[in-house]
Length: 270
Length: 88
Image 1: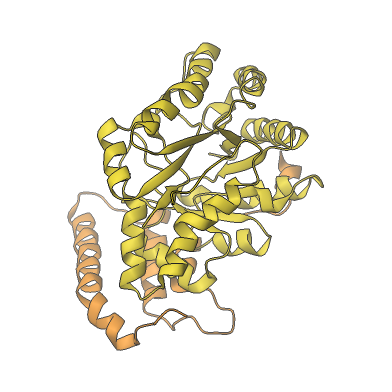
Image 2 (image 1 turned 180 degrees about the vertical axis):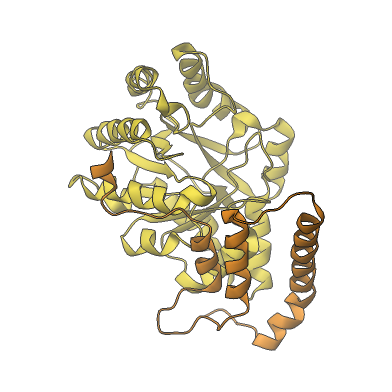
């Protein structure tokens, strides 16, 4: 089955991974800007990273018939540095019109500090001013619930927010209900040890249906699996879900969500 | 509509998985207890105790009660304060 991985960090993955994903049916990815695993030394590192996401990674993916899209932003971990964040946001604006950019992301909170909130508020304002779609990172483990609620509070406070153009990612059992009830898209990340597993993601589909839900690998430089989405497909079949429901979650939903971005162009295979 | 399996079908499929995971939890708790010193008063230990009680309790019902998985996640979550912006 053809599928999209709507959140994967290909800059941290090998070309062998791209080949394996293509063999498994991947036809497109979207890669949000994120933390490198260490704090970058300055603005130039971010500029080069944005170039990598908009120039190099699309070419690398194209060698395997995979369309590469990306999201640009200032990640929550480095957002603690307000001066650097403002420089990065100003630089980011110059990249938003590049042809594979879907919007602003992944942005969000990590430890939910005042500085993170201040940077996030600026990023949301830039996105809304430019009518950009947004992709949100929600915090890990014990911070996830309150961080997700705080992100929703920030979005609710701005009347310009179009919830149908926002994805709240890394949803789990304690957060997906409020995200869907409030009208946002919900991303479920499939990780070996934290976040969700393919089995628990199918549990959520059984409980909440297939509307406005996407699943992703969020594969990066840490323990993660670039073939997590095909493993979700396998679990869906094992649990008796229809092919139509599976296709809806792994292919049609990402297309529907991405199609709201002015830069998204995708021609399905015949 | 998906062809949903029966509860017995699911138990057949999940029993050994559940058994194995519960055994890992039991062994890890034993390992902690064999360590030197004490974890008395450690909030993580109290949260583990709460989740074990949760797993042995009543199932989620159709009256809006959260699933066990959701309740477990909330036990391991920091509290959300609606007025958080005032504190910042």
